[in-house]
Image (cartoon, rainbow, N blue to C red; front, side, top):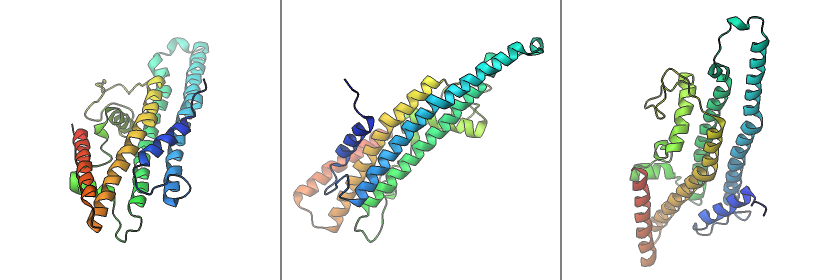
Length: 254
């Protein structure tokens, strides 16, 4: 049986996430929806291409370089004087992966920023005074959308990225999340790196998208209530929704 197209699966997921927003059509009919739709697909496609670049080009090239260097060392007329460990030979391979974590974390940051931009565009339709869900949740619930520590895998990706950028790959960023020796550079293998990319694309992106638009929907309801005379039914649903939001935010602080 043919596997389902991954982009089709993503689009169906997005449609379900956004279906709760009143009068919001995901594709074509609403320009803001169309912009959001294409932005999400572009970000998802980008991270898939990122994985392909590493899997098909960067990692194979790093491995070929190791093989070539080994051959050169074996045939060198000075080989009896050369003492190089296997880990030293593989440093370019490990560095390639560490740099991959830097790139991966930048993609995570950019995804969250872009989704917040798109959510705020929808939030501020027909509003004279522009608002942002970031400010609303920071001021009213002390909640931020870029608390990387709430997700252990994202925190790890951020940590490796910071170690590479600021400590030349040494695990000196405190706390030492992986309990690695401080005077040896981080050595991650490509299989683990690919798993982390898949986690970001298949789980984190989807969860963060759901979070942003769930909380954005609640903000829209609160705005509607403050600007109109809602029915008792709408007020009751708003209270129930607020309890859900509070429980969700509380769960992120555990």
